[in-house]
Every structure is written in structure tokens, then in C-alpha cells.
Amino acid sequence: MTLKLNLQNTTIHVSSSLLVTAIHNVFIIAVILNIIGLILCFFLKDLYMSNEMEEEEISYEDAPG
Amino acid sequence: MGAESDVLKHFKLIVSGLIISLLIVSLDSTITTTAMPKIIANLGGLQYYVWPFTIYLTTVIISAMLSGKLSDFYGSKKILIGALIVFVTGSILCGFSHNMTELILFRALQGLGAGIIVTVPKKIIAEMIPPRQRGKYMGLFGVAGGISSVVGPTLGGFITDSLGWQWIFFINVPIGIIALSLIIPYLPEFEVIVKEKVMDYLGIITFTGALTSFLVALTFSQQNTIISSVLLDSLWIFSVIMLFGFIYAERKAKEPILPLYLFRNSVFTISTIATFLLGAITLAGTVYIPLFLQLVKGLSPSASGAYLTLLLFAMIITAILSGQIISKTGTYKKLAIISFAIGTVGMFLLSTLTQNTSNLELIIYEIIVGIGAGLAMPLFTVAIQNAVTKRDLGVVTSSTMYFRISWKCNWFSHSRSYCKHDIET
Image (cartoon, rainbow over all chains, first blue to last red; front, side):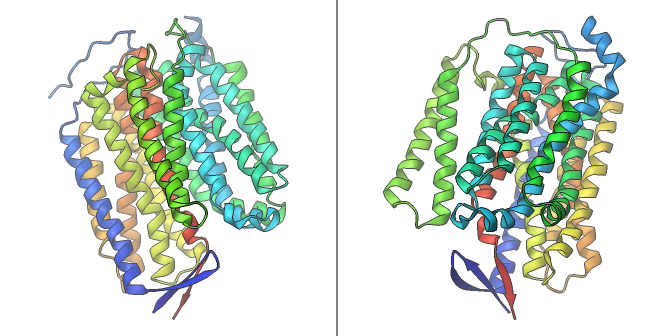
């Protein structure tokens, strides 16, 4: 199977396996980005959220546990 | 005290006004995509297909970046009302466009309003309610985006076919008026914290220069016939020079539009990077799943859109749930880790898709991706707002939006490649 793309009045043929690989690559990049995000989140400081409105200069309070 | 009692009295009406404001902008971007082929047929200028999107998103990013500082200087209410008026005016003018040049210019005007509208409501929530409760409303704001992604393309097709393409712009007028009729009387004007209004003009000029030349170069590089390679290279170089100029300007400015000291705050830095990554991940899912279904499995655009709806529903439900969990626990780190872990699994499963993957498997995979993205949706804005002083609420909210939206520009600049395709077996 081939894909026919009509771009700016020119037609090119792309094999479907190449296309599948290209789309898979995007998903694999998304996996890598997710892993980077996951690692970053381990370093995220968990600041406890108050039920009070903050003052102009807030003091940071770490989350319990 | 007056502002607080006004908020308590009219809270639901205010939040409704903010959600409608967000809905009008997110709906506009999804509706327009479907209508664009008809617009091109009517106005001509296929070679300009991508420009209404690129220019719109460029001005959205610029105004989103400026919105934080503008609302700090002049108050969130005035800036939001002004932005809604600009957006509605731009919509009317778009509907009356006679050619593509006019449409592109008026889309730029619309974008100036839209960038503020997508940012300032999130700052208003932070001005109205305490940190712990904000997640609930950030989740609801996410719903506005999700609903428009589901409804927008179909609605765009329906309006274009039945009333004409002009009405995809005119429809913004009544919705904008409803939003204004809720915001003008009920939203109080909050205290302006930044008393010394020193606009960072050098920062604005260098940021606009860097972004515009980058996007123009990116768009032209996809069209490879319109400008010479020397001019294209010059645009890339100019963009880098302007970026360094922007960093210099921000170091020197008294009231920078992006204060660099914020990057010393680890919550801000990590959340900003995470938001940027999420923008890319969400885009990969929402763009490449339908593309896979159409090009590899041979589904029609509407059928592939129906599959994507499941991902978006999963995202909407978990965004609401995530906001509730943040409000209940008062923390966000575990939820952030869980969301990226689920996203990793979902994307890994998507990377195993083949032509023989069953429909049920595909549905499960994309729901997993939707759950991961939805959990993270309200999280990082709330985390960032909680980690800075009240004085920086505006700039951190606007910079979060900037990092989230910037991916869309890159995508739209080369999206024309997919405007016409068919499968030959």
C-alpha cells in the first residue's frame, strides 16, 4: 500500500510502512518526553496548599510527609 | 473587603463568565480548522492556507505573554473586558473579509484578544480563591478546551454548510456578549499590586521579534519556494539575536514581562518544563492518532475524529477529578508523578500500534493517554501559582500559557502538508 500526498500541486508517493514508522517515531518521542516529565516530577517540591489567601509575600510551607 | 463580598455574592455568575470567555476562544480555534477549506474556496489564496493560523497563534502567544504584566498594571477585570471587545471586533471583521490578506490581518487582531482571554481568567481565579481550591476551577477551565475540541470541528462543518463560513466568526458575537454581560456587572476589580507602571518595551520588542521571525522562518521553510535560502537563514539568525536581546532586556528591566529570577524557584522551573512537555505530548496524541487511523487504517476523517473524542472525554473527566483531588489533599506531587507514569504507559502502547491492532485495543490505549494528560492538566498552573508571591501571579500564569501554546504554532506552521491526502491501495 502506498500513500499519495497531493502537496502544492505536486504528487508524491510514500510507502505505508514508512508512514507507520514515522508515526511510531512520534509516539516514541512522546514516550521519552513522558519519561523526562516523570523524572522531573520526582524533583518537584510539594508545597502544601493553604485554604487561606496568600499575603503579598508568602512564606513557603512544605507538605507534611 | 468589598471585592471579597462581591465575589461571594456572585461567585457562580463570575465563574460562568470566565468559562464562557475561555470557551469562545477555544471553540474559535477548533471551528476555524474545519471551515478553512471553504474559506479558501471563497476568498482564494491556497498558498496562504497556513497564515491565518500562524498569525493568529503568534499574536495569541505575544498577548498571552503580555497579559500577566498588563493585568498587574491595570487590573484583571479591565484587561479581560478589553480583550473580549478586541476578540469580538476581530471576529466581526474576519466575517466581513473580502480576501485572504484581510482575513490574516483580522485574525491577528482576534489573536491579540484571545491570548489575554486564555490567560487572565486563571489569574482571576487565583485572585478570588485560596490556593487549595483553585484546582477545581482550573479543571473546569480544562473542560472548556475539551468540549470545544469535541464539538468544534462538527459545529464548524455544520455552520459552514448551513449558514456560510462567515458565521463561524459571527457566532462569537452573541457568546462574547453573554460573557461580557456576566463579567462587567459581577466581577469586582481586584487591588492592583504593582503600583509603579514601567512597561518593559525592550522586552516586548525583542520577544515579538524573536517569535515572529522564528515562526515566519519555520512557515517559509515548509513552503520552500517562496523566499531565498539567504533570507530564510537571515530570519533564523535574527530570531536567535532577538532571543539573546530578550534575555538581556529581561535582566535589565524594572518590571520584566518574564522575570528571570522566577527560574531560581524550582517549582516554577520544573512546572514550566512539565507544561511544555505536556503541550507536546497532548499534541502528539490529538494529531497523530487521527492521522494514524486515516493513513494506516483507512478510516474517514469523521470516524477518526470519533475515536479521538474518547481520548478527549477521558481527559475532561480526569481534569475535573484531578482538581478535586488537589483541593482535597492540598498537594500535587504524587498526582504529577502518577499522570506522567500513566502517560508513559499510554504512549508506549500507542507506539505498538499496527494495521492489525483491534479497535478495542486502540480505544483502551487512547483512554490511558487521555487519563494521563487530563490528570496533569490543572496541576502545574496551580502548583506555580502556589509557589510565588501574589505580586508574580500574573507573570507566572501568562508564562505557563506561553509554554503550553507554543507547540501549536510549530504544528500549524507545517500542518498544511496534511490538508490534502488520499490513500491509494
